[in-house]
Amino acid sequence: MSYRNKTYVAFASEDISSYRLMEAWRENDKIDFDFFDAHDLYISRDTSKPETIKRNLRERLKNAKQIVLLGSANAKKKGSDGTSFLAHEVKVMAEFNLPIVVANLDGDRTIDRNFIPDPLLEADYYTLSVSFQPKIIQFALDKYVPGFASSSSTGPHYYKENVYAQLGR
Image (cartoon, rainbow, N blue to C red):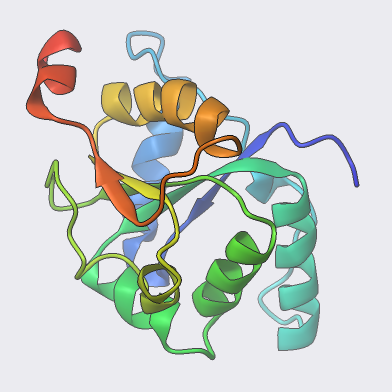
């Protein structure tokens, strides 16, 4: 397997504007936020067959060391339906045992089970929910991700308010 050094951002197609905002955060010199985008690898065209797209998604996830899942009702629905590309991504994330930071698009700082796809909840998969803000997402990628593989934690987790306070939020 190739060296994993990328962040994979997973989202429902309806939430692409939030993904674009994350790209803008990364490019803004005044915002301390960075990620190595796994979407830059194995590009599929809109005309690609579903099997080709799924194969390319798997290859992208092979190169990912961490996931940011944009949490929304759409992500819950599509990630749980068993047929969408997001459902395929969720299945592969769990198969590869990748750390998943759920960035709640509505700004919630706690666990919102209405935003986490059912396969992750049913498997009691260790996830971390944060609000959709660059500082806390970066903090989660820096702190939660390194300890994920050695952790015995299960199920969804979140940071207490004191963590947000330390970050000036």
